[in-house]
Length: 333
Image 1: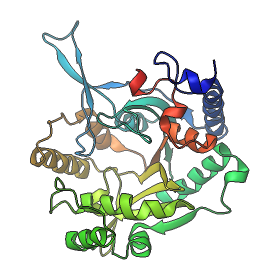
Image 2: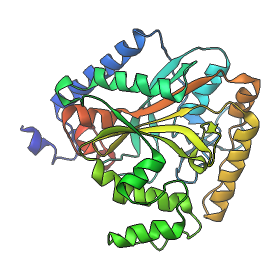
Image 3: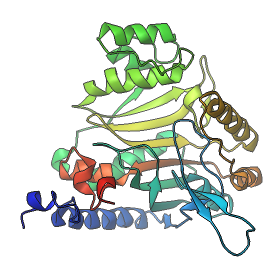
Image 4: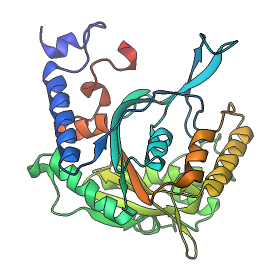
């Protein structure tokens, strides 16, 4: 049966057999890349006693019934292996990487599947600048040479807003961001609060800036301090997050941090995120106290990055729909 006909039959895989073979080859090349650099492959649990407090992510919940619990215990399918991997780093693992399935509820479309494959790695002794160098080297190993740009540009978050949207990405008011959208006939969603400056920044980034990046491969770095998540802050006026993202011709491929090591500051950030969840009437989640204890014991100086493997395969195979690189996307699960 022809692949284009097979994809219309619900029990058949969406991706062609040739794509599944290309995925297997990509995974092999990823492992060879890290083996050559003496980075240890690890495996951590998919289920966790704590979910992510981030208000922009929704964890899937599961229920454990069995020995050791008197009633059903709520567990979460991880949205990233980050917390568990940092516990390994604090225990002395050295530089590590992991290829695993992660889960994010409510995300589906041409670029999203609620279950997807993530590559995450941490390099002890690296800052964010040095890790960007390694991410570029990684991409040059994974993507055909003829598809590679001569160089990967690096543009500060503030500069990319000024260049492509005409506003200051760090200090623009919500009114400035709304005016930017209106001037381009982009509707302002009613559900986005007037006080949510990061939400409006994200909207300008996705609707105004990213569509102009279709011919570029670049790192965006020095994000607003309010978007630090688990990254360190670089002092200044204003302070910025030592965080970067890699955009491959309009497609976000990687998100990296110079990792925060302060348990106290991380606990404060979790508390702030939980407050945001309450304000947005989102379900509460338990904070990962074991992760905070690991930070308290001492996380080594390190940087980490997450790369979407399915999106990486899309780039390598020249596809524009994530479903074309998955055997069974959510509509065939």
